[in-house]
Length: 291
Image: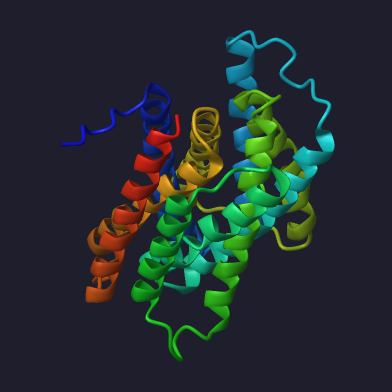
């Protein structure tokens, strides 16, 4: 009888960090949905970057981080954050146009694009079992979406564009973790994306009402913690593993949709979610065997 492969310390640590990322991303979705009817998306991203910049600067100061702003890869930071900003804008727009579960399902094409980008630019080795896990995950997404006339609509393509942008951002993050700390990566994320948001929001500023500020604070803190947690996870596991663990956001956001927005899950969503979780297990088991 084959013994079960024990979970390696690095895989366990990466999974714990990803739990923080999953929770944070779900809270970002809720806050984005609540703010979407009152504030322009570019303004939401301005607040996210500005408040995030204050928080990460305070963390760096209290941690006595040595030379956190020192980098020889500013160009890669710019590339990462250009694609990430585009992905965030498209994602927030999708949140206001589609059910939460559908947005997250469409976003889960990210591992497909990430695997291709990582294999080309980072020379990551993708095993046959990992490719099978990615293909299985894509089948799960197809079952959830149930392609047809409903799939061919602008909001769906907007979210797919976000997924492609995230793939480049994730791959860039993996490369940056080899030389940069999580604090440095998150700091430059806020610093670079702040003027991007200000530029897009020029002439469209809307003064937030009192009820908006709670959601602004939530989206700012959780957007920061989500990327900090994901960056830390990438320091302990391959980029493909981290992104596929991220599949667990789907059942989590489904529960959020049921509880807060009366978005009843379909049978396809339930079956597709089970397949996605199965793909996660296959991928993680393969990673354990190779470490």
